Image (cartoon, rainbow over all chains, first blue to last red):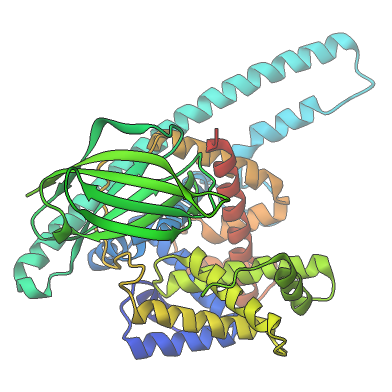
Length: 297
Length: 191
C-alpha cells in the first residue's frame, strides 16, 4: 500500500521522473493501487475545497492541479457534494436512511403524492394543492440556502486565495528570479452560434510582465465538427499561431478546446482569432472570427 | 498516423473485452474512464484525445491480426507509451503544467447559476441512489470532527466491513455520482 502523502505528491506533480514512472507502472499493473490513487485524489480535492491544505500545497494545487479543465470540473463537483454533506449536521445512523435531511421534504412530498385510490376527490385536491405549495416553498427556501452557501464558499475561497497569494508573494521574494515558475494567463472565449465575424467588441487580453504563456480556452457549446483548425494573426500582420486536427473536450458546461501560445509571440495590439470546422468534403469552413486586444505590460 | 476507430475495429475491441456484448460495453466504458484518469494523473495535456489515440493504436494492432491476450493490460502499456510521447515532445500539443489561471472573460453561464444548477443535479442524482448508498457516501465524505481516518474506521465498524472494502465502495459511488452530475449539468446547460 502506498502512503497517501506520496500519492498526493504524485498528483501535485512533485515526484521525480523515476518515482513517477515507478508509481505509474505499479498502478497500471494493480487495480488496488489504481483505486488508492483515485481515493487519494478525492481526498486531496475535498481538502482543497474545505480549505484544509497547507499554504504550499494549496498554492501548488491551484497552479498545477487546476491547470486542466477536467480537474476543475472535479473540484466543482466536490464543492457541490461537500456543500450538501457538510450541511447534514446530525450524525449518520447507518441503515436508518435519515442522515440526508435535505431529502426529507421531498420524501414527504413523494409520500403525499403517491396514488391513494381510497381517498376521495376532495382530499386528493387538498393534497395536490398542498404539494404544489410545498414544491414552490421548498424550492424557494432551497434556492435561498444555495445562494447563501454559494456566497459563503466564494468568501472562503477569496480569503484562502488572498492568503495563498500573500504566501506565494513572500516565497517569491525570497527566491531568485531564475527559480520562479513560468506564469500563465488564460483567456476564455465563447465560439460558435453565429458564423459571421464577431469583431464589434474586442476581448481584452492583459499579459502582465513575466508571463510565459497564454492559454486560450475556446468554449464551443453549439458546434459539432469532427475537428477544428485555429489560427491567430495580428490584424494586418503575421500569423502567430496555427493548429489543426483539434478536437473538443467535454466539460460540465459544454465542450472546449485549450491551446497555449508563448507570451513572447504577442505584442500589444489587435489580433484575429479564426476558428474553422472540418466539413465532410475534407475542407474547412469558418465558424468564428473573434477580435482580441492584447495589452502587454 | 492516426488509424481511427472504425466500427469494425470497435467491434473487435469489444470482442476482446468480453464475449457478452453488454458486459463488453461496460468494460470498455470502465477502461476508457481509467485511461482518461491515467492521462490526467500523468499530467498529459489532453486526456480524452490521448485516450482516443490509445484506442486507435490498440485497434490498429487488432486490425493487423496481432493476438492480444490481455487487452486491458495491453491498452495500459500503449497508453503509457502515448503518455511518454507527450512528455518527450511537449511542444507538439502543449498546455503548460504550471498554470496560474486568471480568466479575463467569463463563459455564458454565470458562476452562481452554474453552482445552483450543479446542486440541483446533485440532488437529483443522490435521489437515484438507494438509501443505503446515500447514507454511505454521506458518512464517508462528511467532515468528521474527530478526523477523517477515525470517522471512516468507525463507519466501517458500524457497517461490519473492512476499511479497504468501504473505501472502494465509497469511491465507486462517488465516481458514479460525479458522472451523473456531469451528464445532468451538460444536458441542462445545452440549449
